[in-house]
Image (spheres, rainbow, N blue to C red):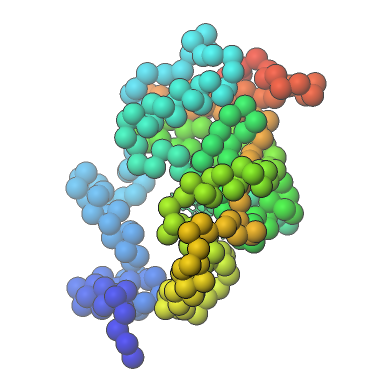
Length: 262
Ligand SMILES: Cc1cc2nc3c(=O)[nH]c(=O)nc-3n(C[C@H](O)[C@H](O)[C@H](O)COP(=O)(O)O)c2cc1C
């Protein structure tokens, strides 16, 4: 049997007596690679339990009186600060969907935002898109740990216009455009080699074309927010939570800010 890179890692770890639980080695006690890393971090803090991992938040809190009345303005402010703080992938957000009462969450990248909502791009045949077609209610969660801040956005999704998707697709590097054609996102595939063979076929298909067209199954989703919550970690777990809700009068207006208990 061919020894893959993963299998080699597992064998080395097993030889060290660790025993990996992630499907490629079977020694006891079972310990996943991630828990090995985490335990190393905990023991360096003098403890041996994940329950002892905690952080006291100390940065400045959130006061209603100091906040703009429009949550989009606060979002822009916090997003800029996350970028300036050099947070890793500040535009990464956890997208939660729910189909047939079964929730599912994954990260996507925010690619545009304005008063209309928050946009990301993906494959329209993917699991997330299937979920959204069945149930347009979704939520987005940002976590900027270095700033002790999180934002939760809830609402309904709509597809962005073809023109908007085209414009963004055309701005992507060629390799990412090839990737969008290559991957039948969320479908099973027998091996890495099979995926790479799909890529080779796509490269050949577009070799003579300077401009690669957007795949019809690829484009943007926009979450139109009805609720936006700003969370700031505070001392003794008395965190700040400020929530804005869209007025139910059909206008674009937001209700007065509300504070929630942490
Ligand atoms: C930081 C980060 C950013 C990601 N951004 C995107 C994205 O913008 N679009 C996308 O389709 N997948 C993105 N992915 C991959 C998704 O998390 C996910 O694996 C993929 O979309 C398939 O999800 P699904 O099967 O639930 O549809 C990203 C993953 C990470 C970790």
